[in-house]
Image 1 (spheres, rainbow, N blue to C red):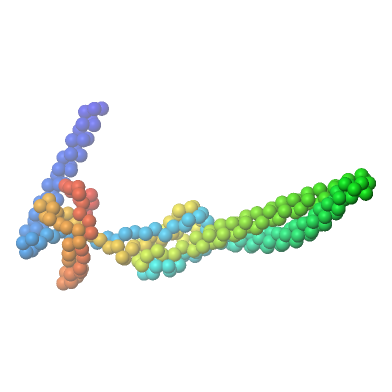
Image 2 (cartoon, rainbow, N blue to C red; image 1 turned 90 degrees about the vertical axis):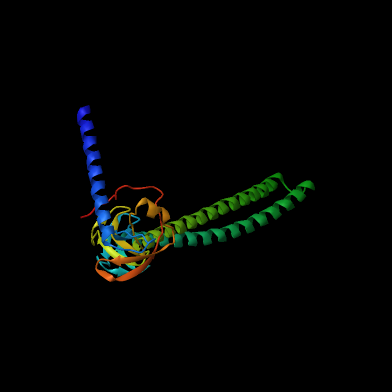
Length: 276
């Protein structure tokens, strides 16, 4: 078993060495064909762009997809709508609950005012009864009735205030639910965050996708780049911000302006992707 493992590793090392040798020879041949002024480095690669996935935040059914592969899209453009029939029903229910809680709160506030007024009268009556008791001008039974009425009125005020707090909490809960549902409704409309071109259309109307499910992939046209490989000496001289020119195979008579945006701090002996 160990011998087989060593044999496999040896084969991989040999294949890597052969690939490196072939790539090096090809690079030297290409450099011989192309004559450039002293101090100018060149390389070839593939023009790429950052890919942006348009995905659903919440799971659900797709109502419509408004872009197809190859379409040019702008920032903020609506690309997909999710089915929101259940959310809209929930929103209407939450609004009804809010309206009921608001109505209950108004009634509870009016009840607090009424109970406080009754408690104030009961407190004044009891104060007079206390004065009469000091002068021994009131029967004990009448005095006790005034005291009980005062205590009952104060307790009624506390109950009314507790009811008012409860209705206000219901209002806050209904408001929070409305905001939550409205947020989900907003998230059900998928928009393009960039100016770009649709690369892939990954889902279709009536499909059910999970949270994070991708619907489209868009190429960000504001972030286009090309990765090239240079010999160590030329790579060491490259500087971020240095001006470059891009020449496409399909239009060699034109040269597009570009700049160096990144120089890898690590050497790479062979490209990660080799295409023929």
